[in-house]
Length: 235
Image (cartoon, rainbow, N blue to C red):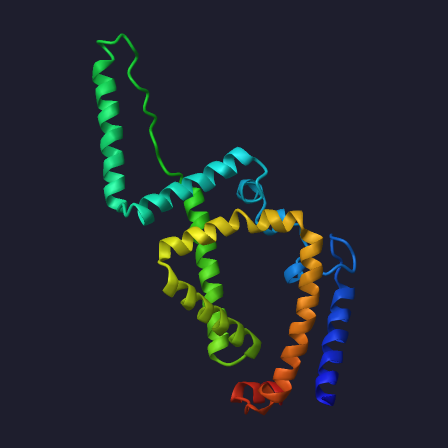
């Protein structure tokens, strides 16, 4: 028990020292979930995507969520296929435009103005660059975990993958994607509304988790032999 209390005192002192060095734009001496220092709008990237997730414009956010719900109903409940849906949509659109273009002479209306559509190169390159950077960073984290450099991160990833495997066995990829999409449109706005209450509860939960982890580390992790990489670092 003495080791456990020493471990808790070390964690508390180190966390207090690091917090004192940081200057947070949010309220001072207030615990924030995941240690964030920015408003939730900035955490979500700012701009229009964050506005949609936080329901700054209810019509746009409701339309996006409603569209996703319609797509999920078509593919999941009605068992519509993607290729079939795309082909039927193109058939209807092309047939309507073709009839409109050729029948405009008889109905004394101007033919439809169809704009030229092209994908700009710069946004695609920016998206590809950001995506490749994030993928490489994920590969780096997985490599560090595989080499045994971070035991906490290893346990977190294993637990996350295990939970994801359980969820994946209960529903398919489309349903899982739809659930994540709905959570993105509900959890951030609810958290922004009840931010102080959630942060206070999260602070108490983190304190309890640290206590339980300290017990687990003393009773279990400290008895596991260290690998060669950790021996080199300690030397």
